[in-house]
Length: 158
Figure 1: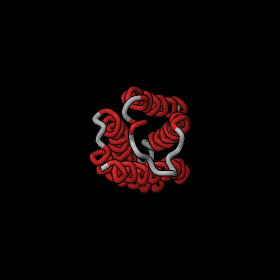
Figure 2: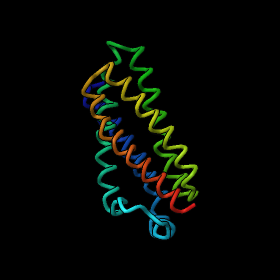
Figure 3: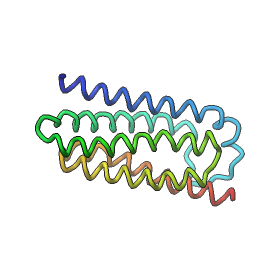
Figure 4: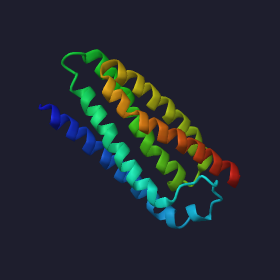
């Protein structure tokens, strides 16, 4: 399989997962979420979709780059991809917990686990391809911010 096809497949997968996660949030964004007390640093709602789209694309490119190393570093690539898939699943689960179940505390616990898995994915990726690892840094930074935001929303509304 061509390298660009692998990257495109992983990018497409990440964007689809992001889209499906967004479907869970749509109703709550207009009904439940506006009723919450939010911290002063809460960004406007319109910022989330473009930021997440960019992050999913970067994540997909990084994943595809790692997949492209399968022939030369199979053991490390398989290990790194396990973390990648786990963090992607937890990423999708967060939207369900926060917006679907409307449970900021459960989402906070989960996003801390997500952050740890992203960090480990970053560590695994950078061992294989430094650029692929670096492509995850904005994602890690955004989830760090999202963790603080999630925790603040839970605190302000409990």
